Amino acid sequence: LLLTDALATLEKFCATLPVNWMLGAGGDQSDFVAAFLHLLRDPALQVPALGCLDQLFCRGKLEFPQFMRIIQELPAAFQIANQEFASHQEYKAAAARATSSGDDASDPLTAQLDFHRALSRTLSTVLSAHLSHLYTRKPSKQDLEKLHSYLELMVQMLQHPSGRILTEQVHTWSNMLRESQIGKTSLLRPFCKDVLVAFMNHMVRVRWEDVEENRHPHARILELSFEDEEGYGSWMMDFRSRCSIMFRLFGHEEPQLASEILNTRVQTLLANHGEGAPIGFVDETNKQLTPKSDAVQQIDSLQQPMDNILSGIPSWALSPKPTKSSQRDQNDQNRASIRTATRAALSQLATSLVNWKPTYLWLKF
Image 1: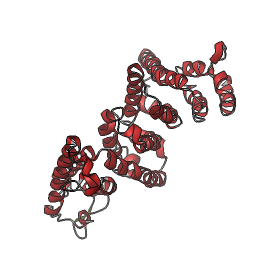
Image 2 (image 1 turned 120 degrees about the vertical axis):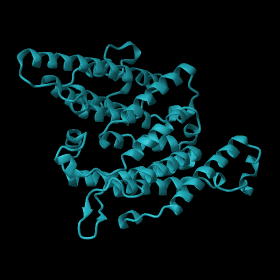
Image 3 (image 1 turned 180 degrees about the vertical axis):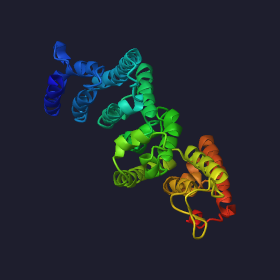
Image 4 (image 1 turned 45 degrees about the vertical axis):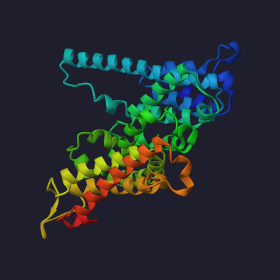
């Protein structure tokens, strides 16, 4: 309790105290960042410690060597924290078996929900506040490897079943895509597919009654994340709004990848749900599907990403021949290849939608 109160006070200091002093620069012994990273090993202190780091990093005052230090040390501290948590869970499970209490260790994702959300926010803050380091300097090969590991951890966080984790990263990915010096480099390209798919997966609405009746596989996590149906509905509207610009930027910066993922998504949804399967939540008066039916919710989740991705795809990737404004790219084989693949994917997508003849009224919307 004493350490928690101390961290709450330090969080206020982190917003104003000199960054160099907090980082122990110049040979000082006051390396607060190292202490905060060390405290991530204690489950009771993880969130307050990350709050202090977040306040410190959001000021955008880190010099490049300091920035790269955080890029290297924060993922390493998270790995150690995971190892400590696993050991703690094993101890609790062994103690429960020894005492025959029947109390098993809780689900790791549920137990660490607040920690993972705070970590996702801090990971995003470090990059968002220091994007200039990524396009004003040319990172060395070693620095690129560290950045790759850091982004890999961020992408892994996007696989979390709680949408709150993803919300913390929307702004960062949008900013990196918006900065052409970053978006067009090989730094982001290996992660674009996983990022786009992760955000599209969370466009599907959850039936809150499935959460309340514990039918959803992640019911407990969703309850802790949103509390009630109204909270979930408000989050979903905000989440979709935040993602609009990101989907548009994906279409603009990676037209081939975005169109191919979108086409694959459409083909999969039409194959699995195009005829209304699985039939459920039917209106007994007319035997029609309702907005709560799985097929309706799956198809509905596609509309917002598709609209924004298509509106973001540049004209040069859609025109059958290079336009006058892009004559300089006529001999650019890379753009020609992207144009061919993009047009092929969108042509198949359009053909599938035109030929789709849904029999249920709600699928036509």
